[in-house]
Image (cartoon, rainbow, N blue to C red; front, side):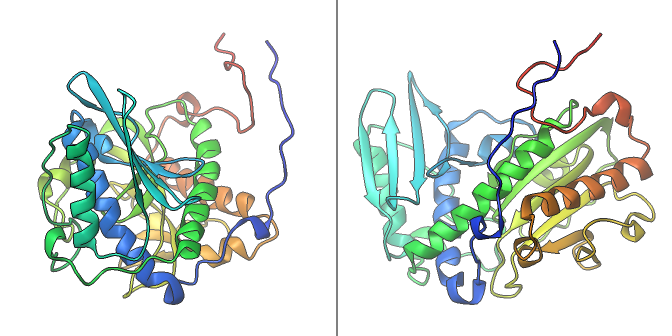
Length: 323
């Protein structure tokens, strides 16, 4: 069979929403805690998958979802809907509870979610405090984070959706072990990871606010990873990032695209600001170039078997030729 190439609608800068963190940061700080609550429900209900893949959320055409998680003979699925601004908690027996996404404290949201789950006869207990944040406040006691602006929430979802689209195409070029395009609620960040197939030296640990056992299991094998992080109060610029573990010697000196990308010494990874992508005429291509060039630098310096791990870029709704 010969490859089939299909034209698709053009994506331009106007399709990528503005993300002025200094204006919408209160909403993302609240959502970060809400994401943690919902993500912990999925993690509690799902069997452990290597690299914590059982804990992540996924971008949908409406927001973010847990995907179905088993509870006895039933499945439970929770979805953030950033079009109608509701949290939908559904059971496979046909019962649904919808909670309005509105300005409310983390404590109120936490009580509502657990109450709705109990109404659905799903008695689940989660670790009651957030992870990967300094000085965590237990969810039931967090009356500080309470902002929710629908426009800001929708803009964040739009950025995640656009990034997931580019990541999806980038992921399709790799035929080795590769993660889903998934949203880790600890960061929070949208991430994609490629694996060389080789084991890695034990990670030294020491990642702030993350147990060493989690970090070491996550980096048990050699990786090249990329992602999107929406920022926080201390670093309010949303960024795309790319790194490798173990970090190849001279990786920080690699020439990567676009010119606006740079090596962040403190983070130990390449960084490209969200605005640097959005402000170009072809944001999708700019972001893809960043993912591709940083991966190539890592893979070449670490001597990955790229011929065995890659296939050409392009939209092909057919199997690749293997003979």
